Image (cartoon, rainbow, N blue to C red; front, side, top):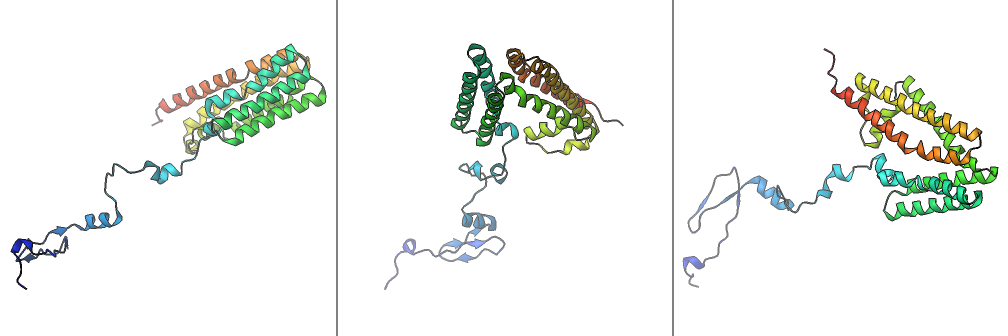
Length: 261
């Protein structure tokens, strides 16, 4: 068979890996070299700076755990947790104990459904509903509306004592909880200024819980159920907000203070 023109001849060039001497073919000229890196990336189907890369493939991002604040449903979830108490206070003033208890439990169920509908973690919703059910059960068994607030009084007493003990053992809860809420570690304890700042902040938190215990405990003993409910709401998140502001101020001052030479 007579071969065709030179331009119609098939080309059987084999790419060369960089680092080997380039060969020449009499018909096609120099044989191109292919860098090793490009060959490996081409075999894996990857290129640097891929615009179609999926950020979800980042191991650090995929292993990220939600913070404590996110597990609590964020600020809306925290505010929603006060709804059953507010409903109980209003219903107890307008009606009587049993309708108030039913209204509080229904409000707790609605709050739980609200959190589930927002795709928030289920555990805080169940815990909040369980807390309302316990308060309602105690009030129902005692036959007194003030029994609804007894778990809150015991809770404040326990937290106040815990904050005081944490200062003594040099594990101030203000720092432990603050860094847990923000998803940080506990390396702050190695800094004496931060340890001192969180100690003062923990003392402020202990004062908040002590104030709750004293005021609401006095109203509980006086059987002032309506004022007890108002005090429960008024000394709830407003005082917590004050304690948070005090914690932030103390920590920022500690961060700005120059280290001793």
